[in-house]
Image (cartoon, rainbow, N blue to C red; front, side, top):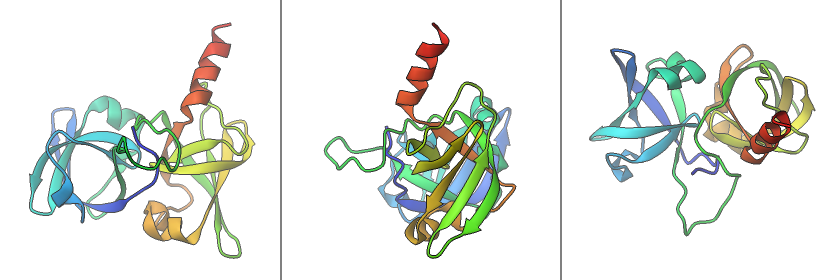
Length: 194
């Protein structure tokens, strides 16, 4: 389980295909703290560390992950939001994040405010919904929904988040990973079954 509080940015240094799987090698200042078989969220996608050498580690994404997320769009030198799994005895900031991306969305708007930024995203419903002031995870970042509409919503980003996550390179037209609030997903499923 994760919280959506990004602790580090990784940089993609190598990408290798093996059948339908893709192996991503990333450099990060937290690499030396990782271990083989550890879960680590990459832009909100939970991937397992399968190799470590010096300050570079390797994770593997299967076809299902590549199909449902933007992980397959990564290129060498891209920055990736990283979060290790939550410690059981730590503070619970953010919200409950599983690291299971529900779908992607497209950034359709970016507006600079006086000291913050408003990003607007469009997505296909697929049974997922946002609610005003509810939680959403965008590329692994726990955020609060504003301006919730059918298939569209916005979030506001403070300078710290912009500077310390991949929001610093996000632009209109980019695809992002969405993980909807787990409670909302259960409620939507229950209502759909009635």
